[in-house]
Image (tube, rainbow, N blue to C red; front, side, top):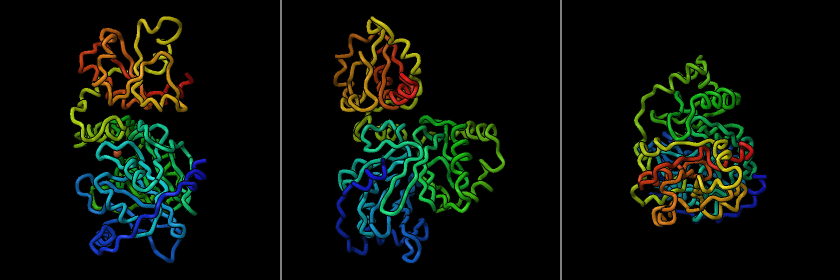
Length: 392
Ligand SMILES: [Fe+2]
């Protein structure tokens, strides 16, 4: 049970920072532009948006804490602001139980691993995330308990397949699936406009109308909304059918995020963020796909390894985990493909299917192999998560 595991986490309480010019002072100075709920006479929780004026990505990162036990979670932390988060934790005297990413971000680099290293927190993401370094892969409806505060994790695909919304009984942190007066784009990184519509209208709009909406981004200076307001006035959703919504989303014509290549591939733990030469988006988009059924059929019976190579690009420890490994697959982690390319030379003229946890790292690997002259490389769509879900 996730909640009991969460309770057992013992992170250290960070030393208080007394400087008036520190992060807490900056937090106070931007209080009119951030959501901040820490009224000492009202309720048992603290909920604070910590990025303030993040002018580049307009990303919002939330601290949610139990006011009495001082246990806390951070939602959607941005690597470049990590010192600020440590300062805010210190200001409130909180122990960080967990850091949660609502989804695999395309516009900034996460710091779940750095927070874990510095505070002992656990990292939490959806079971559909490609990220291999997560302590708790959660399912729809799981409850994360911090002190007396329960946070329900809602699988809300659409912006990405691995998207979660977090509901604490008063607020819903909607990540990028539902924004204030808008919705998150659905045209890359596993997005799907129909899924987005259903996640919003069937799950988020089923919450009480007074629920406070705290989005993952806002580009217009808003700090909060409510489910009732979004139902009534969100221009993409109010009065719109699913077909109308899909038509809107499929015709936005937005440019790709500035940091998409670095962010997606680093956040999927495929590469260190100081390495260059990541595959370009156009190369990733050109990777051909196979379904779990097609891979299962192609690897049935004797002798399939004479016709096909399956390359598993996960870390070796992941092959021992609950998703297991495909018999006959060659394992080379994605970071090592270039340095170990000689091991793959026998497969230059053989069809190759690349697999990983959720299909993101393997897409990078397939693009790299194609760029290195391998003629017939495909990706297992959805990775081993999808393969096991299909019953294989
Ligand atoms: Fe996003």
